[in-house]
Length: 558
Image: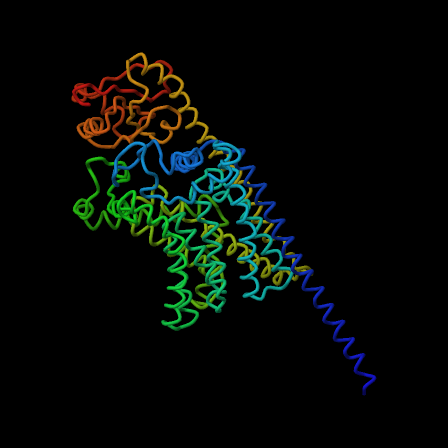
């Protein structure tokens, strides 16, 4: 017996060593796959940045301008005023009276070393956005494990999820823009990945979840819906109100520590830790009220629309956020993802699940909350900018649904091989043309806007100098952020209100010029009307783009 012991020990030691080698190989395989997917994501993001090389919206320019001012030592300010809802109404304006600062922090990082150009900001977003590919892969790994997919099918689903996330049109455009959409997607997906481990009792995951939620909150306030999804998932999983409350309070405490310096800054600058304009956005009857100066949104005006209009607004918002935000940008991939989620819910109901379920649940809460609470504002992008995590969830769900379909066809046709590659390959063939068209359209739109602003910037300063207008005179314009970037003048938003309100705005800000970059609503026609002649005189500026107009503000109205 004693002679057999060394053999047994040697065999056990050999098996232990083999297990250790396999474990190390598995870890290296995981790291290599994640790195490869990150590389694919980075290449795609950089390509999108090359194609879309101008800001897509004034919101994009806002974040980049604040980042530039931070790097140049001016502080967190901007030379444009796009909203009059939150005092102090001064120029330069303290930034982020409504939006959150993370997007500017991300843009500022490479600007410190590479200069304060728009291209430098895009580089930061490319490196951050590339993480969505391995994050989607991790979500898919978790889902494949919970569904007990065979190894070959699981590999196709997980790697396919990473590649599709890297090539997703909405996510690539969000990175090229750049604005709050992409960082919110990254932090949101990371938070949802941490939820299952947190519920299982991992204290380090709980702390990391709080950090991710705090970072997501500093990006967009829709992070509260991520937190609500976490609490709901925890309750479904534990069936314990006390356990759920403890987890929720612990995660919220960590997130609050992350957000506290920002709240203190807002308290010192704006007099309140949370934006007052949030309530205004709930009460909007039309989106132009975002720029209102005297005609602010009110509860009476909101309720005065009547129940039919209020319900119609919510219905329009639900339709817009479903079709224009989810289905059209991602095409059949989003549709298949939604179908898979609905079928899964019908078959299995609401039960404890993994990161994918949390992503889809958080996305559903965000969709409903923004559509119902902000039915007017969401038509201009509220849900669109918060939909990144849901886009990732729908990609993973679409792959799971496509894989199940291929497996069913294999059974019907008695295929000798699994052909698991068909699902991701088919979705990639569908997604690539959509992405190419979306990037081309975004690039064309951004270039057209940039040309218009650049054309105005080329001819307006000389015209104002000839008219005796000092270069320091603030402008009132429908593009305050873009023109304040392109010109030495500070700028305030042109409110869509009666002429008397615009005259009051000109007096309050000592603005001497109104610039309408393109026809919109009543402008510029309202400023040419006979009853406007006492205050506004159109200035002929050779070389201005078609539809643009410049008006001098008369001394009597300044």
